[in-house]
Amino acid sequence: MTSYIVITGYLALMALLLFFAGVKMPIILLVVSITYLLINKHIIRTSFTILRRSLANETLLKVGLVLLFSSIMLWRVRLSAEFEAAPVDTVAGFRIAQIVLALLIGVLRFRKGSLNYLMFSLLTFALVYSCAGILSTLYSSAPMYTLYKATETFTDVILVVSILGSCNNLREFVQFFVIAIGVFLFMEITVWIGMMVWPTAALKSGKGIFGKQLRGILPVINPNKVGFISALLLLSSCFGVVASKLKKEKIFFSTVTLLTLPIFLLAQSRTSTVGVFFAILMFLVLNKKIKWIIVTCVIAGIVFISGALSDIIVGYMIKGENPVMIQTLTGRTLAWEYAWEMFKKSPMFGYGFASGARFDVLKGSSMIGLHGSIFDVLVNLGLVGVIPWLCAIFGVWIQLLRTFLKYSKKMHPETLLFHTFMVSIVVLLTFRSVTATALVMHDMEFIVFLLILGYSQLSTQHRGFTSAPESHGLTHAR
Image (tube, rainbow, N blue to C red; front, side, top):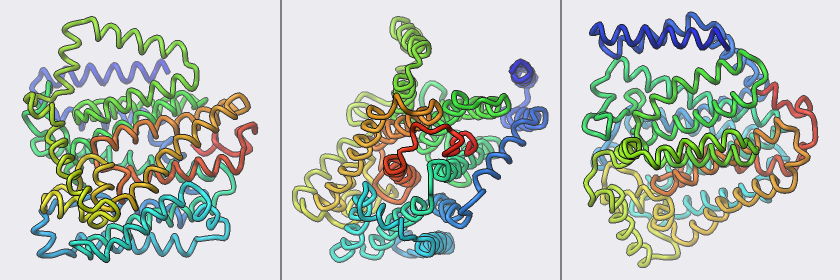
């Protein structure tokens, strides 16, 4: 690790000298990044090793999973009026093709074992939720939009169920989760590239203590989504550092942490910031990392009693907004109040999956949701949708914690780390769902949530917690 620290320190010094020499920040970032990758041979080598292991089997299903994530990536932003004028342009057609192909893969790889996950597990609630969305086409104000968005969500469920049916042990499931994390890492890299190539467009001015707020350019990723991607990568890299036994793997995950942290800070996503703090704290508590818990509490105490540091934290969280905007959570509570009134007019069935929030409440805004998941579901599907949706969320919490309490003393240490890692992600997703349209429809959060739903069922059925890591391959899957 010593050489790694020396390399990092050298590059930091080089970046500082270039900055004071008047070199533009994008060029500094580009030079430092390329130099680091060339010097640190472990990064590229470990990346290919992880990719090779992750594609060891069931490649077709893994392609389907990548297609789902790829279809989420936005390459342009359209107002609702533009959408209504041309619902299926070239980009939308490509996205539809990805969804159709993913659905075909899910159906072709559907096995007898998949039926149990589809009918007798937490994923059953997700299936009922997506089917309710499809049926809401019958009364939606934008039926084709509803049908398309609900079909996307249904495809997510079918593919994840097929993935679980193909997994004979936890090792094989972990490979799929590694693929998902790899897609998030790819999106993070595109944000870095956007900041280097188009710094003016990527760094929105006038926000928070930095005076800038980072977004993705190609693909288009809003700052809050950038914050979530970075938060998930921070959790993943922290898990990797703790769980890895090889020096080169620790270096790889430490590098991911260092590259992700500046993106995370510049995104200034408040919900993800709070969410990742409690997620890491949960991970430390469940793994009884007393030393790190004490360090975290001491740092939090210093920040609390230090006026200067407290001002910085407060300034970071309020992002320069006026008191009215803060009280209304950047206008969210106003939309939620209107959504609640709309829900009371149609409490049982709502107004149509996805279309209720976008077209009936927001009246054709460029936003696709209400930035409050529970209100999105209430308006879109009413009680018919919110009941299975809440059952899935509460169910995964209960299942993961119940498994931890029942088997934690019997689990192999690596298995315990991975299980608590899953719990920490659920913490992040739960916070994210409070002020974002997350866990509601086909999106990165929803797919990750479905994978964790599947993991909770797979781990319960196989009960491989007392086995050595080689038996279920958690070590070799990384």
